[in-house]
Length: 310
Image (cartoon, rainbow, N blue to C red; front, side, top):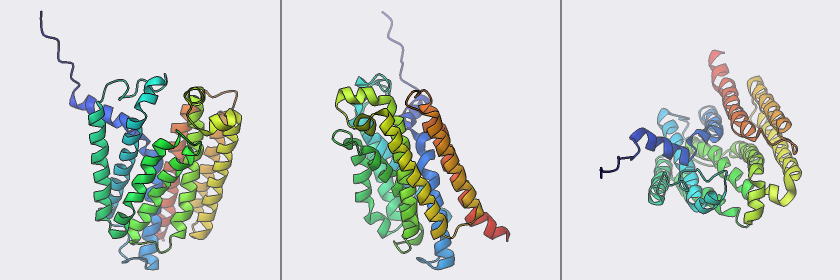
């Protein structure tokens, strides 16, 4: 009998599987807001004298991106590991890499541990204050994965986890917590935005979560109630961005970006209704991806481009 063909996946297939495991494409949600906070921190450092006055450097930018990517990969890897049995039982998620056997449990742990080391190493390179906060950050970003087992507030924990990005960028650029009101307001904006769209995304698992004894806002309040909660969270997002506009003294470009964010959020809530949940994927990925890109572009124009051309 001939030997079985070697069906070991190639390098590219393996990389694609690992990227899919941690949803690398979803980095587009949080990274632009993190970099937007870095832009504001640069202005505060260079023009207001916070920290050593050097502002954002190319090296700091590299470390910030590495820290964000490492933290996010750690969180997603841990989530996939602890949820692998839940994912296997859910028809929507049964084809994910771990339950489908495309990636082994040991390999997933190795990736998660490596990513956490990248996060801690990058934070250390950004200074002692950034390094000091890494244990708390790891606790929050990994703790989210366990919350849905006993509380519907897991969506809020996810929002808190993503909101750490702007805080980290501010500390990385300025070297400390001085002037932290500005990133603090941005944290509220990011946290409520992420929590709100995660509530919408979780609607598609409403029936499974209820049967499996998992907790979520849709399970606790129903589909209609969950959409109301998501809407209220996104109203807080808009309010926080208005507060940031005033607190940071931002101009017309940021205001245009703010209006764009609010308009996209309104459209998101218009296309996802209790009677029609068919466009959840579009609302989750496409629209929220545009929100982060539009907002970052507006911040760059306001804080970097306009002062340079004047």
